[in-house]
Amino acid sequence: MKIVRLMLVCLALLVTTMPAAASNSWLQKGTDTLKSFGMGEKKTTAPGTGTSLPMADIIAGLKEALTVGSGNVVQQLGQADGFYKDPQIRIPLPDTLATVKNALDKVGMGSFADDLELKLNRAAEAATPKARDLFVNAISQMTFEDARGILNGPEDAATRYFREKMSPDLAEAMAPVVDDSLSQVGAVQSYDKMMGQYASLPFVPDVKADLTDHVVQKGMDGIFHYMAKEEAAIRANPVKRSTDLLKKVFQ
Image (cartoon, rainbow, N blue to C red; front, side, top):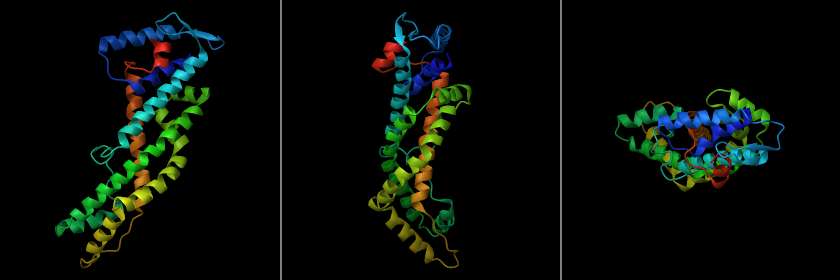
């Protein structure tokens, strides 16, 4: 059944890589077992066990895997340097401030822009934990139709599902945290200092930027970037570690 195939795929939100030979054997075993699954059956045989389990347990396992996996992403990015020291998701200055940075670099005052960039990333790290409950909510709302769409979709289909379900609420939840954090970490003060130095230079154009909106949007991009990487690994690699429920279903 396609939904159970999705379960096998999504479990690897908890994964580490196995050797290629073990991977092929595991995946083939799972594929063979899936052929015996029936939609109308009250109970289903779990892969490799011969144990009959309720379909509710299998669906619960899927949701648990997604919950734990998304929680891992939030934990990774919601700590100090989760954004700042990761070149893949580090938040740069807004494009509108590129002129400011270039002008200050030329006169040896680029440290003002560097300091602001650091504090923008700190604000994103502080706001990322707001995504945890929203992931859980999106997972709880997942229907069989959603699951089929994810299974038949592209490599990042699950991530697209989360982005569609979560983005408006996530932006709303992150904005006040980012706004407060920008003040607490000194980003607003750094911005004012940078713009003051910039304004003192001759013949420079007037520029401005919405720091809160910039951090929220780039912060969400970073979160979904890592969800997509997790999903790609899910589709390529088998499960090596799991929770107690997942071990019960797929031991």
